[in-house]
Length: 600
Picture 1 (cartoon, rainbow, N blue to C red):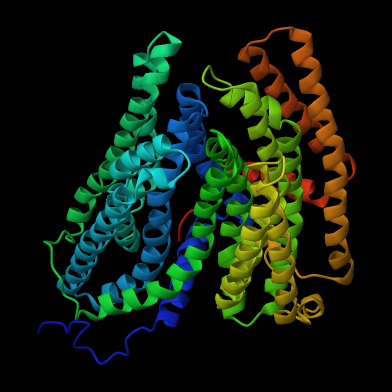
Picture 2: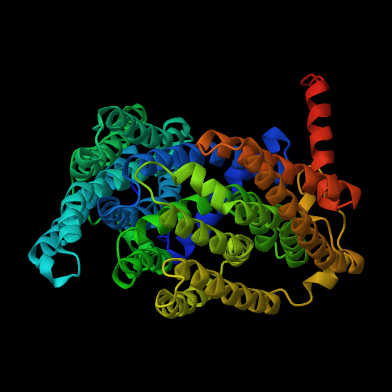
């Protein structure tokens, strides 16, 4: 007897709220199985996530260094960064965020019903809708951009370049969002290999194109100035090719699970309706952040005179994303499943303990990262972005942006962690409302600071100020939700240290220790930052060279000196975070040395 399709079943359809809740639960269960299988703690998982993110960010940094080496801070690269912000906005809205979060829980339900044809119908319809809707949006944007006269804006030449690059880059949206749909489907079937490799493959294609352009660049300065706009166009083509490649390489994997489908529009399919209904609130929440990033770039172009403002802010923000991914994103991603499980079980005292301990560890990691990035901002920018197409003034402006962004690193990292706590408590409205107010405040502060000598660095200062208000507001609301749970955690039983180290119950002394730990980390950071600056400054002067080789040696030495100073002081002052990391390393060595027990 054939099985009933989802459209025929009497089971109640998933609502958007249930889809969001299931998305949290499915991700939590998947990560929990990984933790149980490997026997890792949250700290160890964060370290592994950091390693994976590190590889991806390293390729992205190499790409940005080559971009700065070839194109510097001129009008062509300003136009490219502005143009690329548009497809990047849609990629984050439709591809990486709302679509996958809304699709995975529905696909999980379909798999349980074992109706392969209905699943294929749903996936095929979503893919067809993406071709039609995103294609229409791209055509509309391109049409509007070319209809508006270039003379409307201050620099018609840059507007012409923006139009050209945007026309090439916008179709990237379609392919990268189709890639995200494929990744969501494949992850539902426990196939992660190719989907995890797609970002690296995209970066490698981009780097390959830059390397080819590097070898083909003219030798004379006059020819180079005329060559750069055309070379940036070829780089835009490479970005489009990388999107197509990411989509194509996952098609064989889709065929293996028999989910390749011809174009279709089965709009009556329940899974399609549920997915589209759930995407609405998620799109709004994501748009709050992504539109802010886009408007930052536009404000920099409009209100800062001359060329280079957009490029300086873009290079600096990408450099800022490097430690942010290693610190804030990794830890919040690792602790999220733990908080979700405690929230689902009504164990708010354990959720509070895991949150406070995570904040303590976050301060221990993010404060030195911010201090090191801030004190070494100028030599790092000279090393990475001081190519032949750059000028000392624009490198200094980029370094100032990096310094002010570094000040917001602990703030942005903590915002991510507190937002995850709200999501674990199934409350996505509160952080979204707070973020919307913070974005409006950020736009106002950006406008004010852009009129000052800070120029594009005013965007970074506005980010830090609005972020601080966002963090304080989140903490105030979360404190009301978790009121009393700190004292309750004192009476909770101890949790297994091997898998839930960060959720050890709090005692009054441990609660006080959180504030003391953050203060201690801040104090050590001052010494570490001074040490890193002195080492870099002394070594660069000692070499007496003007090339970037001496900068590379002095910067690496400064980083190494800062790490040694911070680690040494942390161990000397018996910082519990350092002891936890050392104990983790010993446990991992012991686990590796101990032979596995025979199976029963």
